[in-house]
Length: 511
Image (cartoon, rainbow, N blue to C red):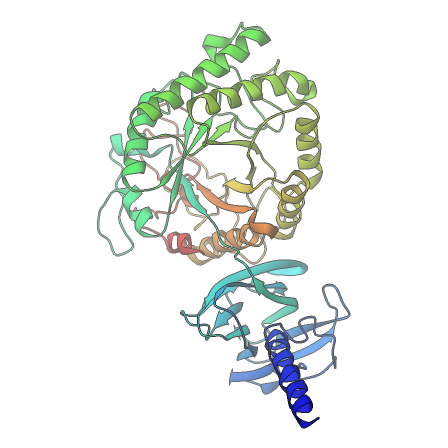
C-alpha cells in the first residue's frame, strides 16, 4: 500500500509541475477586472521611479470589460506596472495591449528580463479611441517581465487594458520609402547628409538607418523624362546593391495618378478597352522584364496607383468595375509572366475609410480580380484617426485573407517653407498630439508602424514613407512639365532644410 501511495504522489507531482509552469506563463488579471477599482492592481507589482506611488491604479472605463489600468499624477512621475512570467519555453513571444494616451512618447509596453535587451512599443496619442499595440521578444532564460510604463509630465495620463502574452511574432517585414524623385534631385545638385553631417548617398544613409525596401513609380512618357524605364532601371541597380527590396508602382499615365485623376498616357488616348488591356500588359511586362534581365527583379508590383476610382479613365473607372477588373488582371498576368514570385499589390487611398475598402475589394472579389497584397495610403491629416486606420487594416486583412501594406504615409517636421511654393501641409499640429516638428514627425511614423505591426495573424507587412528625399532642389518641382514649379512637400521629407537626416529616420529600426 505504501508503495502504491508513493507512486500516486509521484504521478501527481509530475502532473502538477507542468500545470504550474503553464499558469505562470500567462498574464494574471490582464483585463484588470479582479479586485478593481484599486490602487494596487491584483497580480501586478508597481515600481515608482519618481513622483507619487499612486500613479498607477485601476478605475472604471475599460476597453472590453468594466475596468482599466491608468497611469496619472498631478505632478511629473515615472511608474512601471509589471509582472514576471516564468516557466517559458525558449522562443518568440508577443505582448499585446489596448491603450490610450494623452501625449506621444510618454508611455509604453515592454518585454524585459527575457534574455535579450528590453523591447518597447510606445503608446500612440489617442484621447478617446482604444488602439492595440504589440511588442515581440525572444525568450531564452525561461522567464520574461511584462512591463507597462510611463515617464510623464504633470497631468500626463495613459490607459492600458486587455493585456495578453502569447507565443508568436508581430514584426514588420517592410520598412520602406518611395524615392522616385531622387534621380532628378541628384542630377540637379541635390545633396544628402547623415545626422552627424557626413555627406553620402541618400539610399545608403537610409539603409544604415534600417530602411529595407524602396518603392519607385513608373510613368509612361513623362514631360521631364524622369520616372521612365531607363531611370527606374538605374535606380533599381543601386537599390539592390544596398540589399533592399524593390516595389514598382505603375501609374499607367504620363503624370500623377491618384483618386482625383487617372489620365491615360497620350500615346494611349484613343485606345479601345481591348487595346488598353494589351497596352497595360505590354508596358508592365516591358519594364519588369528589363529589371529581371539586369538582375534586379521586382519583389512587389503595384498595378495602378491609388485606384479608388479606377484607372485609365474613362474606360477603367470603378463605376464600371468589369472593365477595371480586366485591366487589373491584364497587369497581374504581365507581372506573373515575368516572375511568379513577385507579389501584386492593389492600392487604394483613404486608409481610415473602411466602407470604401469593403466596397472596393468586395467589388474586386465579385469580378475575379487577382492580387496578393492590399496596399493602403494613410496620411493622418487627411485619412482619419489612427484608430480608424487600425479598424480598417484589421478588418480587410481578415475579410480578404490578404496581408496589408501602407504604401504611402508622411508627416511634416516643420511649418517652414524652403522654396517658393506653399507647402501642402502648413498646420502647426496637423493631427492632434503630433506637432509639425522633428519629434512629431518621428512619433507619427513610429505610431503608424505600430498600428500596422499589430494587425493580427502577421498580416501587417509594413510601411513605406512617401518621398523622404524630395527636398527643395531648384527644378525638381511638382509639375514635370514646368521646370520652374516648386515642391510643396519639402517640409515632409526625412532630410531637413540643411539636407541632414532627421530623427524620424531612426524609426526604420522598428521591429
